[in-house]
Image 1 (cartoon, helix red, strand yellow):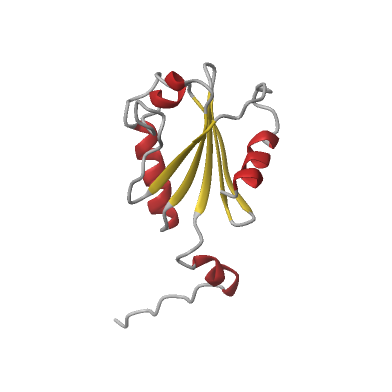
Image 2 (cartoon, one colour):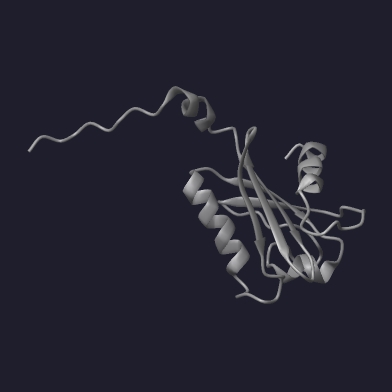
Length: 135
């Protein structure tokens, strides 16, 4: 039996696989839902509406982010949009002082959105935050 050579990576994905480019995750927890928005360059990869903080295992959010990082084979830049300290620390992504975690797979920046929530909506607020923070 002859070994098959792996198929080459399509050109449109090669440029994207540079080490410098990170995928960006925006996470917005609330008492009703935790929204997650994941992009890679200009491409939207994921929109998710997950259970609110506290309803899951304490390591669920860190494990989810580490898994996404492994899947994409690059570290994530995570923006945690949280206006209340108890909401942001409930996900296990920041310490008791409100500073985001930095791991091999992701680093977290905690941002106070300072505007009213619009429900699940169109994720426009997370896209705007993505543009504002550059992450």
